[in-house]
Length: 570
Image 1: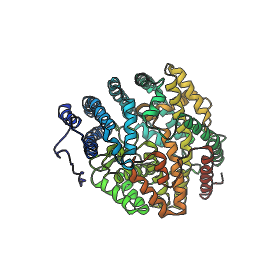
Image 2: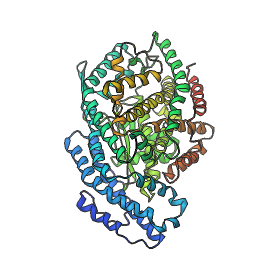
Image 3: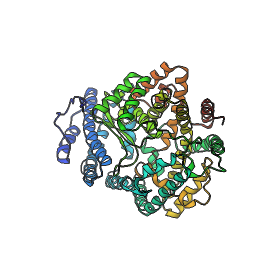
Image 4: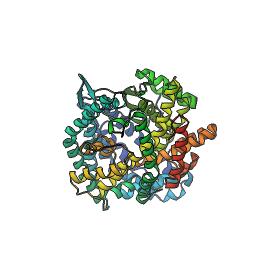
């Protein structure tokens, strides 16, 4: 394993490690007490504080990574200890430093081009900060981890083998319909067993979140989170219009696709256990081992841009990848930026599927974002909004499509992979807006009960149903949301995926016309981090910040035309 050389510290010794509050507190107070008598002093204060935040953020990152990778309770206990005893305790002092910066008379002398968006971010954070919310946030963070713990540690005895829920879900791609149905029902049965636990966790989270919003002066948690996420470029009304646009432009097309699939499969209707299966009975097996997945992903990325492949290979050599699914490992996938290392860590749960190929290329897009902003000295500019972060990752999924022959040598396999990728960009959108609309209702109706919540989810499932027949499966249909980790751990972090998906399709449309220019614009966008407002970031990427019905209609037609080229006349 080859270590990556960390960025050299300017204000702190390399030996400094904020493992406890007794070590960190004096350093924050020292920064807070610094005299600022010029704009140069103010800039130095900003950079010194950013360096300290990078050190603390990376310490938290490694604790989170260990907690999600390993089942031993000690890792979760250490993460919770560090968050409660170090991160939470630092927040009042960090707030005071931010306020000191924002209220400095030298603020007006800062370079607007360099610090304008930073000050906007600071102002939003200052407006929302309430010290009374800190213990609630600590409890929320601790409680939200229970979802991953419950799902990740759950297994099912299936045909004589112990299967994780992710492994069971992967069987839904198999050609044997009876196997798929049995696997799906086993998964739903297990979720039904877990539902009381997960409902209890969520009800407690909901109460904590509603309390935070009211302390901050908001009528509901939805409005609080929209502001806390810094959604300066759009509002709740725009999101509701996006929901309708998906319902009007995407759902009808996907219902056509579903009917086409049913006909090809010789079925009267597609049932839930048929949705992930290939109509031709083909199950893609793009790799056998984690090493093979990494090697092929490096080659694909290198074809888009040599530096992209080199960066993933650097992560492999440095031990910054954990890709295979195993018992006790938390579900999902992520790219976690390591602020000081200048490289990220990629975590996922590979089981040998085509979806795993998309996941590693998706997370590699996040990784390129991390690498591209590694030299940025303002920590807030490396904490880019999700609409930008997911644009980086979703665009990479599409930019790499022309090079998937690395995984698929057979022409039919390649066509299927391309078709799955293209249709996947649209099939995701109804689920995305379902998750968001569900949360919009949950947090604007905080006193609802479990039955009302389930019933509303059922209503949304029908509204955005892409054509599957759920008759006789009402109970199972209500369970679907329990697998969506974001609802538990990252409230309202999901609609950004949908917005970014449209942006990614637009980048890919540009790439097909002028590959060199599109990649150059993509890289320019990555390098900006969050140093500019969101709409400007999208313009830098060569696209519009747009998720209107008209815009969506054009992208649906683009996908329709490209799917026809793979042999499907939908």
